[in-house]
Length: 250
Image (cartoon, rainbow, N blue to C red; front, side, top):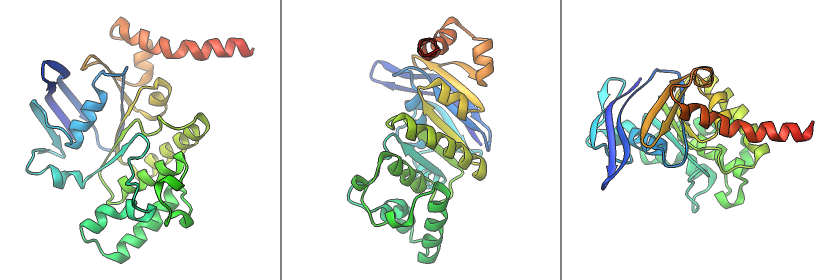
């Protein structure tokens, strides 16, 4: 589905992403994880074509992505960022349908697709005329997901989509998102810094540090067979606070 070959990115003298190889099979959820500044969001933006590579190639279904074809390729991708990234001056309906209207899709198709997506993400129809600042954080993320899915993309890219939500809403949306991924059988690349969230969503986890991939595999492999001390340290650092809390509550 998606293949990265020797892809790299620099900003001046700073290496944001070392030469990187990565494959994402069709229908799989792959999660990029690591500390802040490790390169995971840079890698996602390269896939989306929002920034250009310094070296290497990205292939989507065998086609090399280039500046000449990236705009067309983006119509095959859905992109969700933290806090939704909705246009504040557009209603829910107009936010969700903005690309479909730009591409002059049939009005009947747009209305049908809008209804289908609202049911999928459990967004009440009466919210359609509202503006983003009239919605809760969870509702904004549902709208952002609808917008990303509007053109029925083959590839869904999510950059910390639940990071700004309170714990209860985040838990609820985690359950719903995983169910949606299963229903739609989309290829998903997600960025998170939360190891528990990564393990919940990802069939494959890609742990990054200092612009390079440290280890790739299912969570159990990273936890039981760490490729280097950093892998164990990263997992332990997130486990210990919860274990300490559990000990206090016992």
